[in-house]
Length: 78
Image 1 (cartoon, helix red, strand yellow):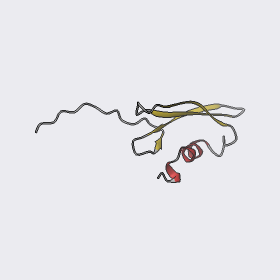
Image 2 (cartoon, rainbow, N blue to C red):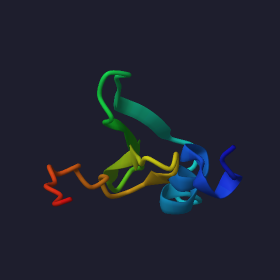
Image 3 (cartoon, helix red, strand yellow):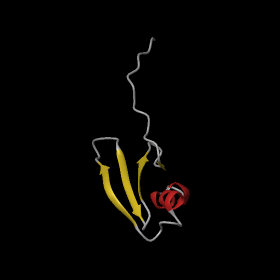
Image 4 (cartoon, one colour):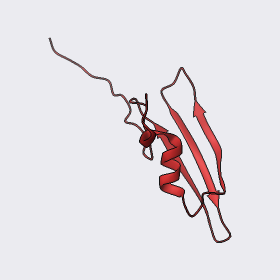
């Protein structure tokens, strides 16, 4: 089970709160079971500026602000 430090909510609060805590919304997301890609775009705004951030889910279940590494083909000699 994920700890609260790795949850999407805690990541959004860490990066966007307390300045934007009242006006946060999810604008885009992707979660397809056949694809390992899972991301959420969170947008927030105030009178002066707006800000959008992408959060990516990694293989270990943690949410991070950078995308996971792509799996590359490998050759092995036996």
